[in-house]
Length: 169
Image 1 (cartoon, rainbow, N blue to C red):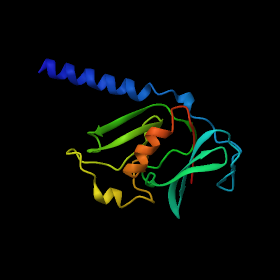
Image 2: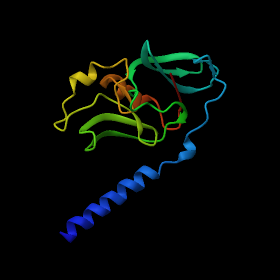
Image 3: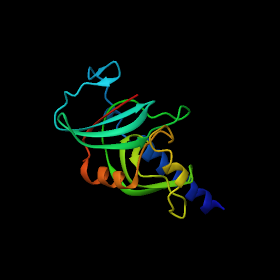
């Protein structure tokens, strides 16, 4: 019993350290790139826009003012919204599984704290949850930005850590 409790405390300690080890300075204030909720395309280099408008959620990857790729996505629900603002991509991994949500996903890229870009949620048996895939284009997640599997892989492979991400509604 003592060993189990000690292991539990160790695991909980590691989880708390991971959650709070995120560099909170990675979050930047939204600046003058917004005019009436429209992004002014004045950024240089590779950057990502996430638009969570009612008429459709999408991710737009740009190089300067040129659109490189546009992807349908799903942001958070009103109860669990996606964080808005300007961020710098931090790190990534090939897959994760969350016991808390009983879901996992492929090709995650960290926006900030627990907010990620990732593929469609999967079951513990690693099967895509079709009803979650069918929600692409509107609010559906716990705050992350969900992408289709092909788009999540492309994003993972082509958008490096350190890239600026602007998320707005």
